[in-house]
Image 1 (spheres, rainbow, N blue to C red):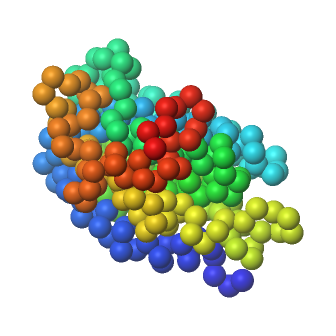
Image 2 (spheres, rainbow, N blue to C red):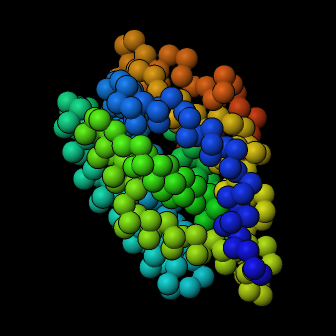
Length: 267
């Protein structure tokens, strides 16, 4: 086939990507106007998210049909823990956040919903579905990172985060996952191999066309400060919304978000 499957996927979400680029959180990163409280909340929640993301990658590694993919996803899982821990450790110090306080933080409702969805998909779905579920975190961060690098930031803390996700090394990591995705598209997988359905998470579950849009609320959460009496891990007052739609009721209706072992379903 002449066109890469990933190219088809990207063409279908350009409107959503354009909306991401003008989000106030990203604009604030680039022009330096983002409050320290908002960025602190994001960093702590991101650390909680990445712990689950690393587990999801490790599960995909175990389900991969070939040793090359097993090695790649297992290495990525280890890199998420090592590299992100270092980055967040530096940022926590710069932001004046006690690491012990951050470790005790609880996931905000949107963080819990997203990570629960990821773990449920890699546990219960096919290998291809698992790859589709984790791909957006690679891909969107890389594309956003490149755009933010072009804009730059006057705040060195924000620029450090931008540099992390816009570097060539991260770009090579993302491309390796896109290469795997291209092999999983409909009509592209080999005989008997699991294919990634055209409606699968890359453009539906995560990027907002099919599942409730509450999954896109992470940046909105980060754009608000902790609720009165809450800590860094507390969901900000009224923040559990995406496009003005409550997250938890949507999670309750979606049914499939909170099915992974060890988590209490609210559906």
